[in-house]
Length: 595
Ligand SMILES: NC(=O)c1ccc[n+]([C@@H]2O[C@H](COP(=O)([O-])OP(=O)(O)OC[C@H]3O[C@@H](n4cnc5c(N)ncnc54)[C@H](O)[C@@H]3O)[C@@H](O)[C@H]2O)c1
Ligand SMILES: O=C(O)[C@H](O)COP(=O)(O)O
Image (cartoon, rainbow, N blue to C red; front, side, top):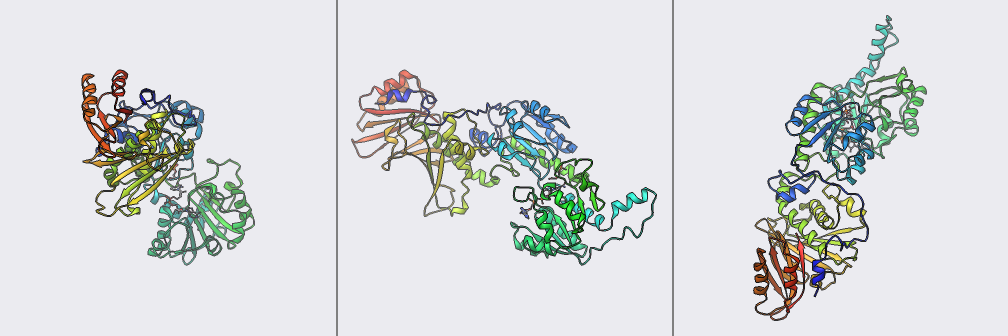
């Protein structure tokens, strides 16, 4: 009998072969939000809601409406122009950080937070100033405000386009310098000219609409944009080479990524029409700035109008900024009163929601799960975590869990079931009982990978009504020994299976034994020879020790052969109580498991 194994401390019997050193002491207490989820599940999805008021550091100027919204929920520390060192020092006292584009949220910032930083809010679109990998590794959610400054950026793009074409900035400076140079500042017309919009997303689309209104012929290049969206506003999607080689004007609207970095370079300038004009309100890094200076000097590029730069602010002696054919603004695309109020509200709502434990609609480094899907999946999320917890506690110490298979049985079409949330919570259940790592939706996949834990998912397609998202979930751990031999299935893996009944998770299978026990509190699993009186004996030992039994279920192969008894208990039995259960002659093995 495995009585001693049953009593052993779970942490000491860690089945992981790798030791894990990063720990995230959570400052948060129990959950308060997401009414459709149980307290435990909602608290663990992305960010745990907190008992005390959280602290939000606002590191760049934010619209008043957003600040007011934040102040209703959190202590707000507005500290602008912090050096990296000052930011790293302050961050360990903050639960959330809000920035615009000027603050570098580097790996060092996440490391300095000591696990307290749970949300970074980017008050704007571009998240290239936030180290997303570091955020994800630290389980920190990054949210942005992707919609509120779209029109402002598009309007600024059009302002630069028209100002450049008519030499407005240069002519203005000249008049103010006392000159009157009418022939020097003859411009070019826009009507009938071809504008190539590079990046046909939110801003690019709005620029395209406006440029069409100015009578321009608009084409666009965007490898990921749907052709019908472009067609709907009369824009043709073309290849990169076609766009740059046919355009009179190029307007850049793609994000800065490794793929778009320096996408305009010597090679691409060489393919452009002589006299092309370029507008950039996206990111400085999408242009090789030195190559642009060469193209301007050679006359390939007639003019450029730039709102963004590789280095901001650019060096005072920047050849690009000082070039007479270049018009510049200091990253003003999003800077209208209206956009800044909108962005402030959008980011404040996202940060407060995330701190409350809600899944953020504008999450950048976590799967976005719509509210209605979340509500439907909520009880299965709880089930998934508990099955993960249970399965890993059944692994014998030193086994080294490497491979877990999760099967989802459902009558739904495969693309009608988003399992990312379930996979994340199973991972949480598998990892948290045996380590101090805080696992959430943000870092679940990363954490599993770090530990060399491979989680494969499989769909079991069932006939019947697709009303329920899932019929049952099965978790199997391969190539391990078990502390409870009966949990090993015929095919040799630890196998547990569960269902949701009346929104409560139930354990319905252990190894080859069918049981039915609600997954609340803790669980005792016993294997015994099926005979009269055993249930009574175990029940009375627990009763004598004042341990309340919530559920009891027996699964057996055949009458009078081996049976597995699953007993749900509200309280943790003492070692002595468990010893007494182990002492019952018919009981061959048992384990005590915390759910
Ligand atoms: N200057 C400013 O103040 C300001 C304001 C708002 C946005 N922006 C910047 O403008 C850019 C666009 O913002 P948005 O809100 O439209 O973002 P968005 O995500 O809606 O659009 C970006 C588009 O770029 C496309 N894209 C990605 N890779 C591409 C590639 N290699 N070639 C062509 N297209 C590619 C994407 O498919 C997407 O459609 C971002 O870089 C953002 O940071 C700047
Ligand atoms: O990506 C963005 O949203 C813009 O570049 C705006 O940046 P800002 O918030 O620094 O104005």
